[in-house]
Image 1: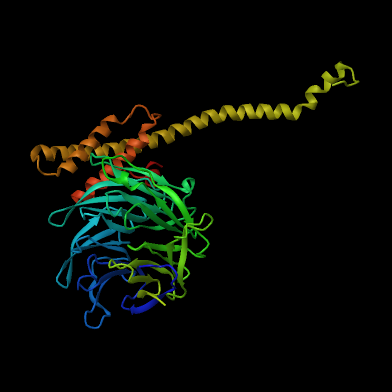
Image 2: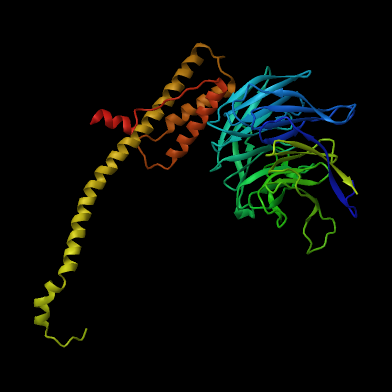
Length: 348
Length: 145
């Protein structure tokens, strides 16, 4: 998609209603929405349920196909599909992480991971689907190995953050884990080759990092850049020499490339980098913003520019934004107003 | 000081003039000496309590590790290799813990590591093992006094 010299609009396609409390997070099912497979989206909410939405091939609109309930006893804060799309993991304030298996149109809870002392805030599968990471209010990050027969074995309990850990996210290609926290830092975790995981880098204010809570992070398609969003009203872009991230060649540290500030005036809760290079943010000012790399290459120009701002995208805080895996076509957003919206980026 | 008064008069009034300062100094000295005694006793009590707590936590882990090792002795395949390795690591850490040297800087690092490994084993075995410890101060006071 060429973004030069065109103006764009984020057009609301559909508003998904059904949750009876704030919606915290959305996740597109991998390998759906392409090759005739209808797009599937999962959403999780303060109403303790997860809803599965599927795009109808005939009408083109999303319909709720399943409600995953009666398992979590408190808010479901985060959900993540396994790379195969066979399983979905849900992290809840009830201190557990549930693993659901998709059989036909049914979803069955096949495992419950217990270990966190209290609220689990985020869950993430690694690229191969062999490892699962969780984090939470007890300041710890957990790594679980996925074994045959829906068994999960705890690989490591990692302590390092000094506050609530908001999000865990695996690198899209290699088994490096990233976590961000209320302690304003981002930590990078790596296995030492002997089943022991360690923090190999901490990105703080001293590394040009954030000065307040880091809420979320996302990677670009090639995995050599990462964007983080924060309560300090800025986005930060970090980069690494991708050649060195291959395992067995030592660890290449991540470095601050630039900060995107001056665009947000309330907390940025969510950030997602599309496969085609568009960074979307969801913030406490109810707006969605899109940013793209500035290709003008002028010395004094910022490296990223605002593509568009969608004011009043929701009636309340935008908690999560997520690009569909089919590319830039669809963006899903979740809000405190209890709704999910599906957006299409169109040129006007 | 080039004072015009003769030195004999200064001597007479000297102790009177410095009365307040003298008392202050004496009071400080007495207070300091008393503080040393009571501070030492207080420190002893805190040390006893903390030492006891550390001891009972270490003892609890020792007991768990011994129990797991016994289970492995009966059935070497009862745990996964990762759990067995973690049990071994806990065993090593417990042996390494410098019980006789509380000022050794490695104590907190070893204790943190023990706690994390214990949580990992419990999560994998899907067991809730918790030792609440000896009755806490509030309960203990009721019993003692």
